[in-house]
Length: 124
Image 1 (cartoon, rainbow, N blue to C red):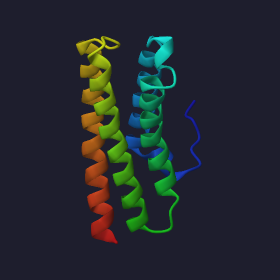
Image 2: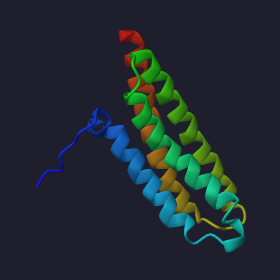
Image 3: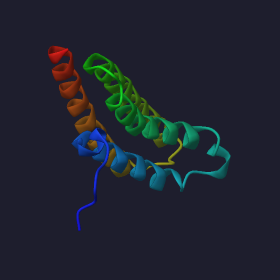
Image 4: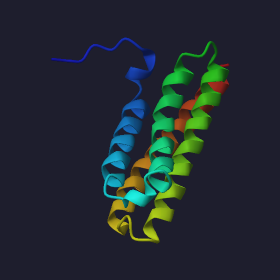
């Protein structure tokens, strides 16, 4: 049975990829030390969630230019995820192979966001 979709962003591949990235971040940060709960754990989770939410919010904006702007905010959050992941390696909260998976997903999402934003700006 195919899931019914009600919103335009639900049709976007980058939206679904960003949901997967956020889910991965949540799984990995669950193993972070308790004293990082309000620090790096929270920051990494908020950044990953922000990618998804900026894509969703932007698709509901009135213009293609506004959507493109929200997509660039989402891309900024992707970069924040990558930066926070690098911070998590130093104290060994994450292993290099875990960061590789996140970085691959982040690179894919970032490239697709950039392409979509560029197309939207060209059409605006």
